Length: 283
Image (cartoon, one colour):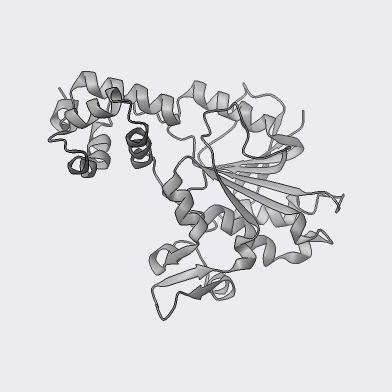
């Protein structure tokens, strides 16, 4: 059997796929045993397991909630970069913020599945470097909520310290000089400035558990980019309906470059902008 070549029985692989889908929405299908093996094998020794089958059985049947949390975090990809694709941040300062007429109300932006923090910090930096777009809207009226199901990713993001390799992924020299400073005498680690950090609120939230929102009220814009690529169609529809419900009328949803809102989700108008698309809630 294919999965047994990776140290996992067919039965345990199927059970683990069900567990992962229920926990975080990731649908592994039938051919990702290699991924399970590569992500979980480093954890075996720490839990006294001699092989992957034994470890997966411990995950599935021991009711160890901390272990299950660690495993889900290990299986979730944290691939991200600064100002990914460019246009979502240009659209924010050129269209979303200028459309706000009532300067006394709060501007609310949600970065869902924020991973290590590059996306919400990119949003904050784009606003700070283009303050003219605010047209009188005070900075203390701006709230950027950043959520992820991984506590380790959130703790990293809150710290706001990135190595030069992290910073090289999409961050311009202008932004690095304006918003980062070296950590101590180090030339390899840089801390993001307090002006950026003060705009972002990090909170734990599992996107597929759509009972509660991680904030009060509704959003002007939601960034949920490259989060749902491993969800099955039913889970995608459920999450997209949830996100739509978290938007104000005339609010915007920004997805990854390969993602789209299907026709089953009504009341969302697709708009082309630069080299991508955005969706506006119209009903």
